[in-house]
Length: 378
Image (cartoon, rainbow, N blue to C red; front, top):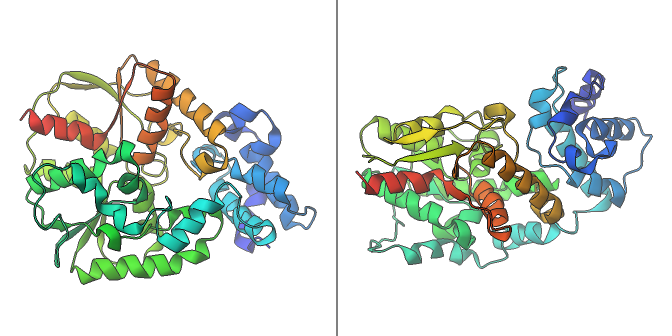
């Protein structure tokens, strides 16, 4: 059953409905059961023994981005994310993994990535780097480990992110290494799938490999990897999202940025911003580039609207994920900016994929794209 500390959250809910206005899924499906308030009431009935979980409820709780918008909106302080994740655990115990999510999870457990690829292919993004050093960024010892993550390693649309990141680190003179095939998925998808107990092997492996390198710091361009390590990995290593690390390098004068005359807007990724607390670093980076004009989205910082790619929703319901992405694009267009910058490979995939399919005139960039572009103008 749901733990007592989770069940206590139910009594805080006053059913005011403010969460309905901020939930990207609830606003699309127009049924109470898909709203945060509705899910809280279903979870309460289950905890009280008045509800039997079946496949129908598995589908209901899968239609959630775990974006956290409801939690920051709740005037009563209900931690909806905690409740929804606990319900996903209960559903897995009773009904098994969601059939649309199961292939990626089985791949993670068997092949250590979500793409069902041979994990040795994690380093293939380096093939397009001109003048690749002989060590290919794999070293026996390094001060810093760049943890690339599954999506940026294996999805061609966003492989420019690690290509950019190693160029930035190399230009700044950072003693860094990547782990390539020795890197395993951080385990974050296991939490969203309802089986966080399976993370132990993943955590032990990744920590062991980083320690073998003698590293003191780990840098992540994936917000979910960053969040997984911060919240679930028992370590005293310095953990930084790439925006935090780049801001530091810029502040130290290790990176020179030339002028770019562009008007851009910035999309706060859920796991970096609202769930990770990193809002200022990416904005500081953009403002440090001469000529850049930053126009904020109507909903920014902790009010940011999800891109549609969170919470395993893309796997569970790709159509709904795409609808949320379209809504994000419309919000971006309202700023008048022709370029949207974000700091998450999944946000880039969700937004850029929809832009390409619907032939929208919008440039979608990861923040490393614009930093490398500015470096080339220095």
